[in-house]
Image 1: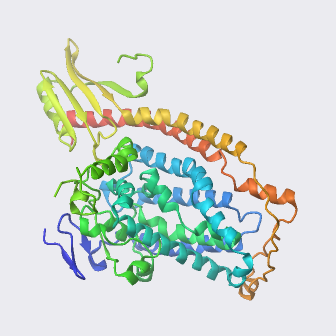
Image 2 (image 1 turned 90 degrees about the vertical axis):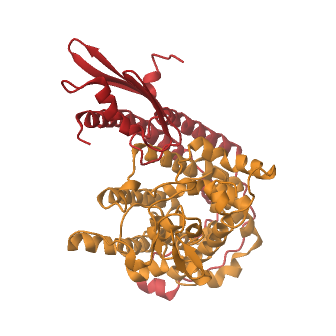
Image 3 (image 1 turned 120 degrees about the vertical axis):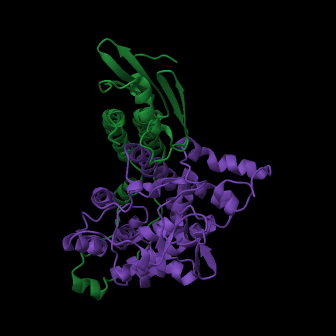
Length: 331
Length: 199
C-alpha cells in the first residue's frame, strides 16, 4: 500500500485508511435522518449542559449524574442499531458481555481503588496543600467558564498521559491491551488492562469537587463530547464540531491496524489540543487492532503487560514502541 | 470432564433434520465454509466434524463458541445433524454475577474499616455568585456544612457504595439468560441456512 502523505508522515502503508473529511462517507437517507444525525451531538451537548446548569441543588449530585450517564449511553446503544458506521463493528452478545465486564470493573473495583489510592486520594492530598482562598478568583467566574477550564485542564493532562503511553514502553505495555479491540462500540472505551484504566483515570479532575456544580457541568461536557470516540454510529458532525472535538473518525484512525495512524489523535475530548501539538489527522479507518486484528481474550488482557514486560526484561522482545512491537513481529 | 447436570451452562446442543435427499458429505461440505475463519481449525472424519477456535474475531459468526462436534446420523426416518458446542463466554457470563457479589462484599468490608476523620474546619471564603449566573437564573449553591454531623454525613456520601456491584451482578445474570437462549437460536438458524444453501 502506498499510504497518504500527511505533513511529514505517510499514513496507511500497512492497512487501509481514509484521509480527509471530504473522502469520508456521509449519512444516507431522507432529510429527517440527515437532520437528526447532523445535529444530535450539538443538541445533546446543549441539553446536558443546560440540565446541570439549572438542576436544583437536591438533584445536582454525582449519584444522579451516574444515572443520567447511563440513560444517555442506552440512547447511544439504540443509535448504534439504527445507524451503524460499519456492519463489521456490529455489537454481538459476546462483545457486549466482554465490554460490560470492563465497565463493571471500572464502576466497582477500580472505583474503590481510585477512592483510596488513585485519583480521589491524589486529589485529596493536593487539596490539603491549598487553601480555598487561593481559588476565590476561580470560584467567582461564571459557572460555564469554570466548567470549561476544568475540561481543558483535565484534557490537557489526559493528552500527555495518552501520548506518553504511545511513546514510553513501560506505559505502552498496559495501554497496548486497549489497542487489541477490533471494533468500536459504545463501551469499548472501558476495555483494557486495569493498570492502564487506573493510570488513565489519574488526573486532577477530582480536585475540583469543591465546585460541585461546575464539576458536574464539566463531567457532562466531557461525556457529551468524548463519548463518541468509541461508538459505532455514523454522524454528519458539523465542521466546527469536528474541528474542536474528538470524533469516531479521529479515534478509529488512532485504533487502526496501521502503526503510523495510531500515533495520532491522542486527546480525550478536545481534538483541538492535537491540532495545537501537530498530532491531529482527520480521517477514519474500519480495520482496527494489532497483530493483524487478533482478538485478545480477557485472560490475556489481564496478563499481557506483565508477560510482555518480563520478555522485554529478558531481551526476548523489543522494549520500544515501534512497528515491530505493535505488529507482534520481531524486527 | 463429564458434568451432565451442570454442563448445559456452557454447552449448546441441538438436532437439525437434513433436507430430503441430502447426503452427510454434502451437509458437511455446506457447513465447512463456517470454519474458514481466522483462528479456527477443523477436522473431518467420516460423517463427523470437530472444530476449535482461538482468539476468534468479534466478526466471526461462531465467535461465542470455542470448540464443538458436529455429526450426521442416519436413521430410518431420515438424516439429521447433531451438534454440541462449548462456550467459555457463556460460562464466564454465568460466573460473573458471583464475582460482582464478591466485589460488593469487599466494598462493604472496606467501608466498615474506613472511619472518616474530621479535620479542623477551615474558614471557607464566601464567594458571591457571578452576576452572569444570577442573570441566567442558576440555582444559588447550598452553604457548606458547618456542624460535625453534616460534615460526617458528607464524608460518608463520598465513599464508594456496593450498589454498582449489585447492579452489575444483576446485569450479568440477565445477560446470561439472554445469551443462553439467543446464541442457541442463532447457531441453529445459522446451521439451517447453510444446510438449505440459502447463504
